[in-house]
Image (cartoon, rainbow, N blue to C red; front, side, top):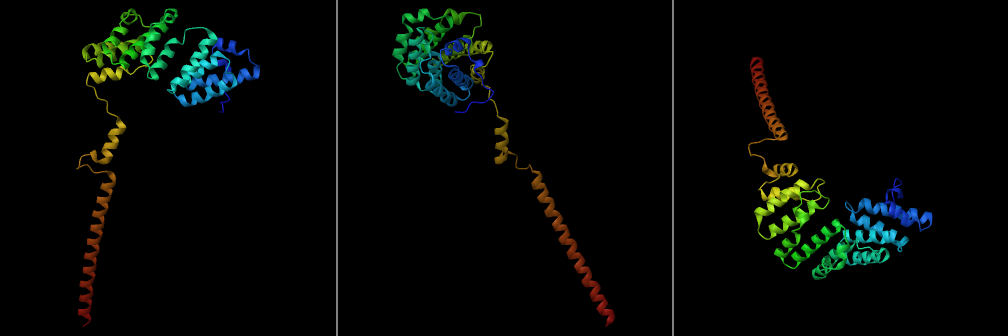
Length: 281
């Protein structure tokens, strides 16, 4: 896959650059540029990101950062089995537990929520940083919902991080998940409260909490483009006349006037001719 000329390997994380130093320079440059494209496209064009990840994987499959990037690209395309295999490979290479929550979520994607819950209770979770532990809590709550255990999902999300007034990178998603679980359980009033809290903490628009809150409040958004299309299909009042119709009507009136004038003129000429014929006789 072609890579734009302006893409350089300098955009990748310094730790990844350090890891790629084990490769020959030309190869390291090619791999790093493909990893940059994965990072650029993974949100807006997951399929494109996946394509670049496969190129990087073909070039340097023994580099942990490459396996991890390939895992996230597969995950973004809902290729959960493939993603899980790549994450496991990256974990074996690094020995870290950072990927544990997303590996558990892959188990959910594969229809194995029980396995995800087992992972949520594993010792590895205690080795995660705060962000990783919150992510693991979100995955566990999702697994509970997959199994139809709504009340358990709500309890799973109740935590010091949820109750905290401090806004962290995970706050909006945690509050959103809690509000959504409450709503699914029929607790609409509480759900509205937590969707509002999610909106307050969602500075970068990572959730659609504002839309969900508006929906609960009965607010309907009309698309201006849809309105125009409705009017074009007959939504405008019957008495309304478009400029084209006015022009056509005016044209018809003018034609009628011209025909009438011509008829009067012809009659006048006939009378004059008869008068002239009478004088000649």
